View (tube, rainbow, N blue to C red):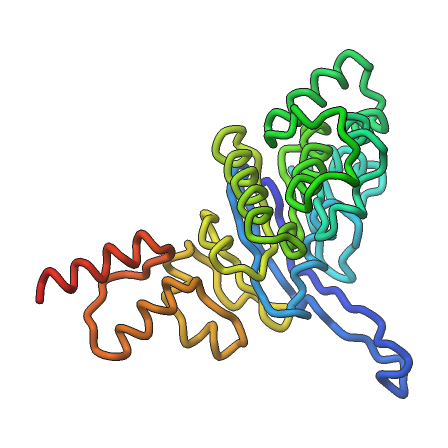
Length: 286
């Protein structure tokens, strides 16, 4: 049994009154099925309106499918009696960290979730300390969140989810509002949590260089799966992705253009190091 199972899910939003003369609805997920295994690092890609954020909110029961089912460890998110158990297993981190910070001191903010779960104080203390250490924010535990940088705030928001000890963290564009340094800090944290603590990660991102760090990419288009595979498999289809208004990592783009110009570059480089190595091989042959 997969950790998360999405079975033939359909979901629609009511169209805004000014957009339509009748009460039509917009279907954003169309008979969608997929599964995520425990410990996987999955990146969800797709242009705006492809259904990524809707799907993310289904993983812990914030939204319910119109048809089909979403199951976490076999528990159906439509079962209200199971929702608390599901949300203990799947935590959600949103785009704007300011929307998730609720206290005036960092450690109090991280303690908020475990307190609401009814965890005893001594155990909360342990969880808060461990969570802050996991995101390299322990030294800021007595600081005011509003004085932190964007990247630091997002790491505190992630720590707040970690303190609830979920098996999975879903991150909906967590770096969208951050500068390059903040993005790096958050992505380093996400990779570390997945590799060292075996936390299942589902990352929604518009940054292809971030997506390349995942074990698996699922590309959504028009509420359906356009592609599903490893980053090298998915990003090798440059023309397919571009025809659906999607991008590829910069290194992949460069290699694609060099190949188009006649240079015989092997494989699909995903980062600068791989790209340099691939070009170096070609130059040495010449």
